[in-house]
Amino acid sequence: VTADSDSLTASGRTVKSIKLTASGKADITSPAANVSLTGSVDDQPLDIKAALVTSEGKRSINGFLVSLGDNKVSGDLALDDKFMPLGTLTLDAPAIDQLAALAGQAITGDIDGTIRFAGDGDAPSVAIDAKSTSIARGEVMAKAITVNALIANYLKAPAISGTIKADSVTSGTTEIGGIGVDLKRDGDWTNFTGGATIAGIPATAAGRVKIADGTTSIEIASGEATVRGIKAAIAQAST
Image (tube, rainbow, N blue to C red; front, side, top):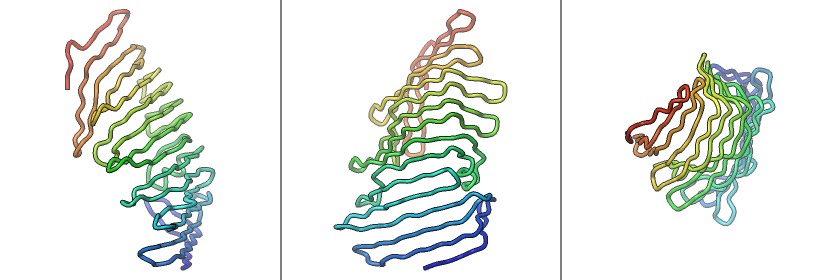
């Protein structure tokens, strides 16, 4: 199947010179498909493609690619019995605003890294290893960001372990520097410890968070800040 269109507008963005090509085999036991879409957005070339392959009863998505200008998301993914993805996607986006605009979001900056999907019974996980020179949305800007995190059971009750760091986050005239957060999974909870300097005031905090059934629970075990050489701390744990 081949289809062409001069333009298509979605989320306020117009894709021009669209060409869609699709072929495949409609076999319930061994489906196969090849899909390719090309076009342009703001004079930047758009290329989307993927191939569904079935081999020995196992399904996979090979050659997955979303490319817009210099930005690419690519990789090969296997699908388990519940059609959950297994495998790694590589993210290379030196101008993330181009990709964000397709989703109707006004975000600028860059990001590169990997997203790795894995399965553990009924609790799938995703590992994120990414870094960015800067990311901004509106008045909020973060610089020199690194994320190394494993999100377990990300569909039902996500629990995170790893580290998140940033040199600075600014919002208007407020600046937070030296941000570092360590995360550790504890059952359905995520324990956290971290520190930052907020408007020139060093501060630390520790506690845990849980997300389940649409509800987020946060418990603060300790917190401390130093103002002009005087330390102030939370007297007791709170939720």
